[in-house]
Image (cartoon, rainbow, N blue to C red):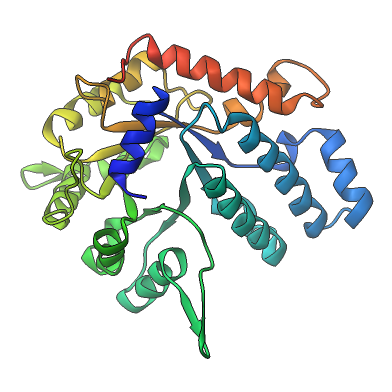
Length: 307
């Protein structure tokens, strides 16, 4: 896929939202946990099994409504090899269901390590005469604050295979301003990162008008969304922090252009934990997640019309 394909999926579904798979034990209903633990014990393997059942069921429930899924790698990597195996399985399953799949890993490292990261998420690993693709995904989040060394190894995959990267430009966590809002000469630091994204996008602009390089932006700062949307009209925004973190439908509307294009809003806990808000035993967690996703679509739709 590519940013063009993502924009087209959003247009087709009239829904600029993304479900975030950020599982944690407290978000998993007891009925799901106990079934997994009865098979594999209260072990990392057992919890990984619960994550797989839970996340896969939510993906199935939302596949006709939501165009994209974000998989938070830390939640799975915390369980060691069992969690990584489940994450790989979920990536493949989400793609098979038709989702645009984003690995939320915020990678960033020196050139030779960045090249390995790029190969791992987008390429194939050669072992003997065979090739293996560890992850089936369309995009990854990157920490570009190490400079071009951390980003350039990913760019050939963007150009040649239609992969996407989303650079951390301005984030929704409160302490992000300690660095991202500093004045650097005649610019603010986060605009310097956006400027670099535009520089790296020279030959990466698709037919939709957006670069294969996107920008992570905060749902919690509507003023920044408005300012950055006007200035960086070629960058597709991944808007994080909706719902549980305080981002509102009206606020995130500033991330879109006049056609309702150029952004996608991600929500995790408000969808994954919808059964808890409904105060049920969790047996209906997939149905509750669907209800929350429908509500999110409708709420954003009050302020954003996707043409």
